[in-house]
Length: 357
Image 1: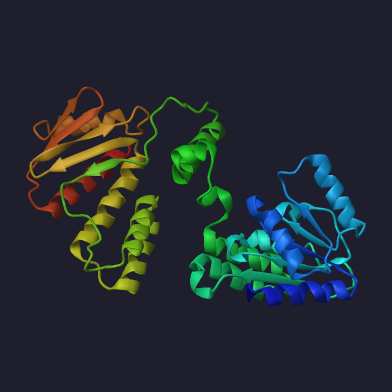
Image 2: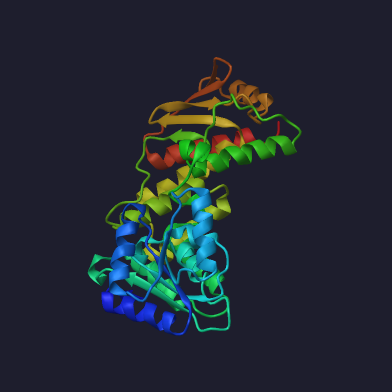
């Protein structure tokens, strides 16, 4: 990796030409590629220069590549079109202009265009001044320079995951339906369809998609800023807590948070308690739970697993406390001024609805 300078370019090309070889000069901007070739010709008069890029006609491009292969040119000014080009054993130097604009996988692929014979190969990554590089560009360049041994491909793939995410599916460059709905929701929808097919059912694409039960107990359930000041960490933990699908996962998260940030304040304890209720309610096919100081209601989904006999037994036992509304809602009333009492009431109610009649 070198800061771009005419002397560096001239030395690199002349070294290759003087040993009878050929060189690639990568300039990935078609609008200025001809100007670049002219300037390169002035810098290195000994060079016979050809130009190749993706906007050329197919026959013309084929002719240029053939001429370069047969050594009618000894320097090819080109775009990244050579990534998957023909092997030229005598081309053992590649100079990448503005390497900071190239992706990690691109640089690795382009570097592989040279060194296909017994000659020592050279790859020059030319960049502007270090202060002009972005953080990600600097990481990519450091990774490609460091990965020069066997197994470099795997190492670079790992670095690529760290820098930009796991490929296009998880990264920013998503497309089609995934771009429309987001990766997480797309995977949840796919999971629902797979489960339906495995159970012998046809996935119902018209059924509204929900990410678990909606629970509102009118209490403070959050991660306070004074407990965890870093916004990124808070968002990540919110996501992990909301995605938890078992009590065991929630317990592990609580232990992790206590270990990393200290004892849980009351609002965080409430957050975990509400999340545990959400796990249980979702398993029972409950769409929504809304509760306040004087009572609330439960709304059941069409495919709820709650045994109707449990509801009937509950209402018959305490008719003043419980009442059915509209066939899919259970209304309840009680003195629940204290948030802890509210949590306990709803938890015990869900346990009762989940037991067998």
